[in-house]
Image (cartoon, rainbow, N blue to C red; front, top):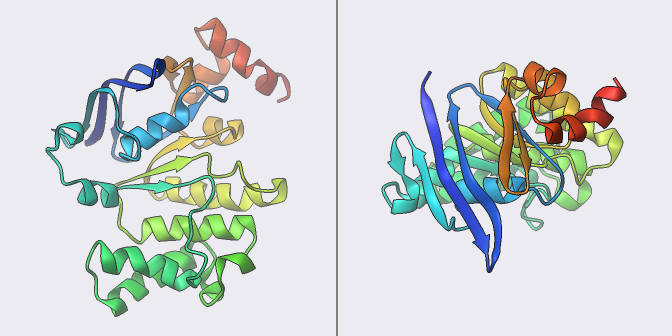
Length: 246
């Protein structure tokens, strides 16, 4: 398979607190990888290091074989190719829905306005938000904001999309609409790395699941392996509440 990212011996410390400890895994084209684990296990920090929002303390992040931590890849170009969808949407509140999806394209990718608008409309339609193009974020529900944020990320033509707990700030009735969009992206072949507490998504949509504990990858495997025959007692314990309810 076409490998896009390779994470090698990644370490991140905040002062004396080692948040990520010797993380290794790969992301290939078409992968949908769910990263699960208790709060504080390092999941979001891992994504933020991959997207260069946090500086890793050690290790390597290879993008098509080039180490971004060693400056072998242009940082702005890399960020367009490895997009991020945040827990808290991060939309520009004074911009319309359409302008939120255009601004990155015109400023970073240097696209012409009409081309950027066409691309924005394409993805806003895809996530079911094309009728809200003139609305400001404050006029939208949480689920609608997150769908706009996904469209904005897609409009940058990323190779990989990183999702940092994209449903955790949403009211329960809005979670489904965002997960449906993510599921359709996965079915369309989008490469995705998803930090999530939505265990059904991890089980049913991912092709790989990573369970993190105390800043380490405790276990990695297919959804079937992780959910139904985990090797680690910690994985088993973490998932027991979920599987006992199914």
